[in-house]
Length: 291
Image 1 (cartoon, rainbow, N blue to C red):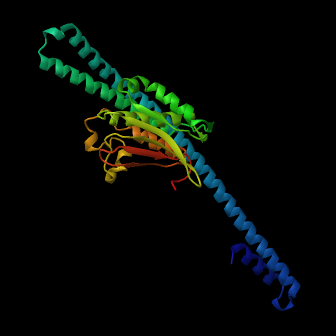
Image 2: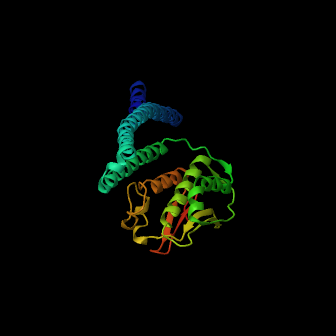
Image 3: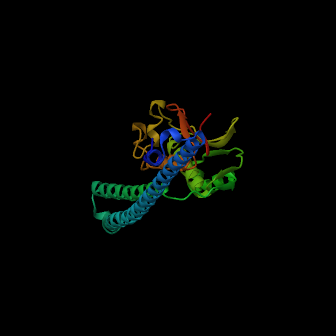
């Protein structure tokens, strides 16, 4: 029994002998008691809601402050790392250009290795920054044609595709709801991945398409490259997670992690099917789960 109801009943008992109370009077007392209990509960709930709102506002502000600090820190780290990397690459290039003819072949090779690793680190910094910023990037979805997005991505990779004579097979893609700039990143990364791992193939083929299920559209990018063991299917989507068979190929190991994060932002799912030496297919949806 609440303190308010107890106080009401005690007051009634003190003011009026119990034997003289009518049934209707008891009903009035109980109604008053119930009203007071409800008022106390509503007041407590309202106060709890206000406390929760104040706590949420405080946590939101803390999160916004933390994100601003992270952006500033990321910019600082990026700038501080890029500057010495550019210097190392630039000076190595000058030495090779001005004194290359006087250097022993081994020295030239070492300097080229230095330049390659420095350029790799620069790309890694850029990829990690892109990966970290994706979590805070707003999602601007609209109805669009994936075919247009794929063609834009293919145009970016066109010089390498033409040089290698890659057979690109683009199937009809139904309209979808997505963020066009982020979807473009998905296709650029998946196509670049397919391009990379078909490098040793005679007659490389990259296929882009979609299939309809009862509940959704499943998009895919398929290649006839080196493939991989399905035991490591999840590992390929992790940051810095590169399979042993992939170590001889260029790249930072962040591209597919970026793809997964973009698909997660669209509340979709991405997965891979592959077989060693028989190619790989990356499937993704933009909403829901795979059927």
